[in-house]
Image (cartoon, rainbow, N blue to C red):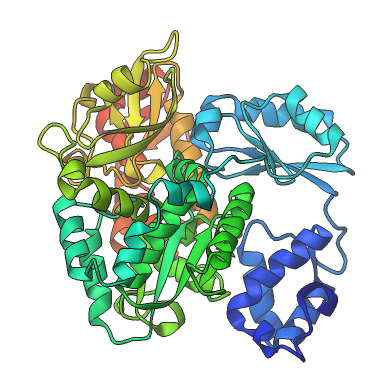
Length: 544
């Protein structure tokens, strides 16, 4: 263990609790699993109880804990994405084909949640290599060649970004040419809000954190696990330095002691990109070595919730905290912490360069700003489409997505990923933005739009979404832990009882600790509200 991680006797910093998940990653990457022997050694290495190490290792899906009486997993793992977008593209049949065609002693085939590549569904990950528009032949060829490394990413290097004016705003902020107050005023005028899902005004969040006594931290949430969402990956792959400049400006605004970036583990290629980009900044003297801390998630949707992400950054299971206090008051290491989404900070340099009125000037139907829509499902051109806030789904499909896919007719859509609810085609003219969908029982969230057609099985859609929530519940609170499992059981029946589903939904929404349990019933309630006729035509009996 000391050869792999370093000698903790010479460098006590290696024993810091917040490094636990990073150490677990190092062992998993080296051996392909975590044996109890390694976990016991790690507990001694870090001077932690074995229970704490074991609890953390077993919480995350990407760690394979092997007990003393168990065999390690095969050397090759094939993960088949089972998100809704991939299910619509035939992932279940692909999984069955792959299982039938491999030697289970050498290769294991498992289902995995959304991998953030929904525009290229179905998606399969072999080792750390993602196979897009996957077929059995394509996956088997990757297995045969042994090319399990992340795919190459062509990204804008520091020199090119600076030639285009990059990091000028950061320099002006540090030199006092741009004040925090002026920047906050610009963000308020632009109406920049949290683009990870909550939509909280960015300038207000900065204000609340600045009110708290230091030391303070800044943490960027790059764990976009909401099924159907891939916009953050899109921007990070193309211009990581624009994101880093926005993140560093945010850290400067709250006088943060350090900047933490929490990147989902499903983006291994981006981990390398950001590691190199941070190295460029340090080599150029733009940031002190170690100021930007890049951390890997380990496969837990719940860590998209800000307090759960903070727990994970501290090396613990990612279980949401009770609030108050809020993370702006007591966040990372119990200090005031600014948490922003990747896309939110990505826009900051552009808003200052082009003017707040430029950003706010976009919009339709009385809304302001731009939205990055992650569109997947039954459209001709899925992908990230930058469109005016307030655009309707019908407009988005026709103007940006090339219309519906051949042979498909719009039946419904998810405006905000799995948790945002489901709307019928008859409500495809509602402006898509924050605060416009609540009356219809939905919300835009991260603007992950999944388009359904008349060919799609609505019961399969509902069970897919609830199976995801049941699997991803952290288990901390009973309404979510038991409620998601119970709702899935009720949906798997041929007869849906409205009174049972609505009563269970109300308990989950009222009593769950965080947004996972509170939002999990949304797609079911949407189907009960707007899709009774379609369910009946698909032989689902809805009573009540």
